[in-house]
Image (cartoon, one colour):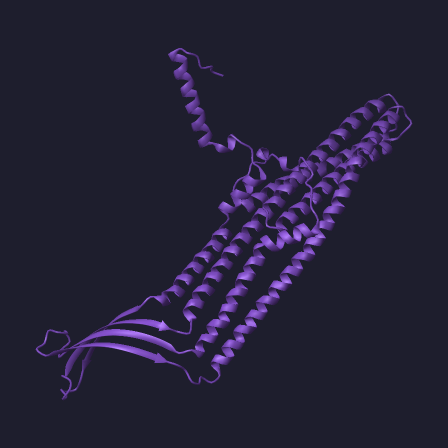
Length: 431
C-alpha cells in the first residue's frame, strides 16, 4: 500500500492510485462487493421482460385516461365536398364544391364524461397495482431461488464431508485389515458405502449447479455463486401474530388494491350507464364556403355561410337498451365485490397456514440442531470402539449415516423455516 507523505512525488503517486481504484470499482462493480438477496431481487426487477409487459399495460391505462379526458375538449372538423351533376340545375352548377369547417363542444351529457375520466383513472390505478404485484412475485421467486442455492450448497458440503469421512475410515480400515484387526468384509462394506457417497456427491454438485441456473433465469443475468453472501440466513427471523399480518396484508396487498380499484371503477360504470337517461346538449359553430367548380373560390360565383347551432337530444325509447346496460353494470359491481371477498378469504386462509408451517419449522429446526451434536458424539464414540475392536464397520457406517442425516434434516428444517418466512413477507407485500 502506498502511503501519502508530504513530498510531491509520493503525493502524485497516491492521487494516481486513488483515481485508478475508483475507475476500477466503477468498471468492475461485481469485484468490489458480494451479491446479497436484495441486489439479486433488484437485478431481476430491472431485467425481466414480464415487468416491462406490465409497465406497458400501465402506459395503455394512461392512454385510456387521456382518451376519456378528450371529451372535455372541442371537436374540430374540416370537410371538402366535390359534386358533379349530369347538368346544371337552378340551384347548382354541373360542377360545384364546398369547404366546411366546424367546431363542436359538448355542454352536457348526463355527467358521463366526468364518470368516464374517473373510471379510467381507477383502471389505470389497478394496472399500477398489478405491476407492483408482479414485482413482489419476482422478488419472492428470487428469494426462494436464493434460499434453494443456500440449501443445495449446504447439502453439497454435507456430501463432501461424508465422502471425506468414509475415505478416512476406509484408509484406517485398510491399515487395520493389514494387521488382522478387522475382517475383509468390514473393509468391503466401507468401500461400497464410500462409492455410494461419491455418487451422491456428484449428484449434489449437479443439484447445486442447477440451483444457480434457476436463479439466473429468475434474474435474467449471470450469477457468480461464489459472490453470494447468504448473510440473510445467519439469524432466525421472528414473526408476529395472525392479527398483525392480516391487518397489514389487507392494507398493503396489491392484488386487493387492484380489485378494490376495479370495483370502484365498476361503480362509476353504473353512473355512466345511468347517464344515458339524460339529454345530450352540444353547441357548434361552422363556416361553409360554396364554389361553382372544384376549386372553391376560384370561379366567378361563390357563397359563404356562417352557422351557430345548439343541439339538445334525448332518447325516448331504445328497446330497453338503457335498462339492460344499467342492470349489467350493477351485476359487474356485484361480481367485482365477490372477487374481492374471495381473494381476502383465500389470502387469510393462506396466512393462517403459513404461520402454522412456520411454527412447525421452528420446532423442527431446534430438534434438528440438537440432533447434530448427538450424532457427532455418537460417531466419536463409535470410532473409538471400532478401533478397540468393540464395534464393527457396520456400526461406523451407521454412525456416519446418522450424522449426515442429522445435518440434512437441519438444512431442510432451516430451508423450510425461511420458505415460510418469505411466504409471510410475500403475504404482506413487504419485499
